[in-house]
Length: 129
Image (cartoon, rainbow, N blue to C red; front, side, top):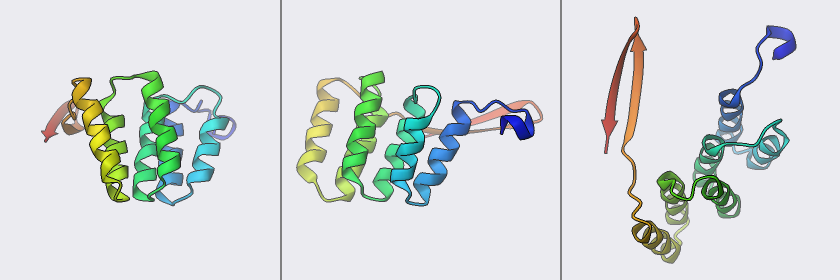
């Protein structure tokens, strides 16, 4: 990318690759890609990977991703919500209850989703609960 197009890959570029690999179900390849990055993966990378683990019902890799997010930011409610959703998708209801209990004990609430688009320099943002 750098040699052909003169663009130095940033974290966002790596996140897109993790998303592509995750969506295709190539979770092992995605985690190998994360581990080979020239810098430490941030929470965005790990949340992207955790979401793919939920889609493909891979609890073990999902738990690893959640652990990495919580290591960087113990109060990241998205990590808890995504992990809870992963457990729910695999029918592990006791684990779901355990995660929700942890969220309550830490006073974490699920953040609202949002989307935005910029057109002609004007940004429009919508929040979703």
